Image 1 (cartoon, rainbow, N blue to C red):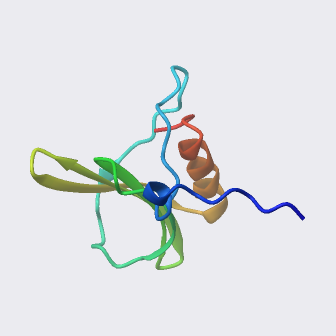
Image 2 (cartoon, rainbow, N blue to C red; image 1 turned 120 degrees about the horizontal axis):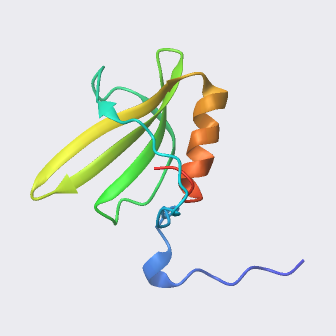
Length: 100
């Protein structure tokens, strides 16, 4: 079995980076955070950029949380609260630059 090359030192602790949106992307409807910050985070993107995302579960629902750092403020909103299968599809598209 061939071992994959080691990650560069500067990239060792990074998670996925969301690519630039495609021109034909599906717009997601973002709403202000409704129920506070308590959620189980199942997956996340790297927070080294001003905007990062978390795939969350809370109260039997799945949703995507978006955190934006703009002009010294931290803005948090969410989308796709509901059924896991539908939210996972949106998450996959987000990670591919097909939704945003």
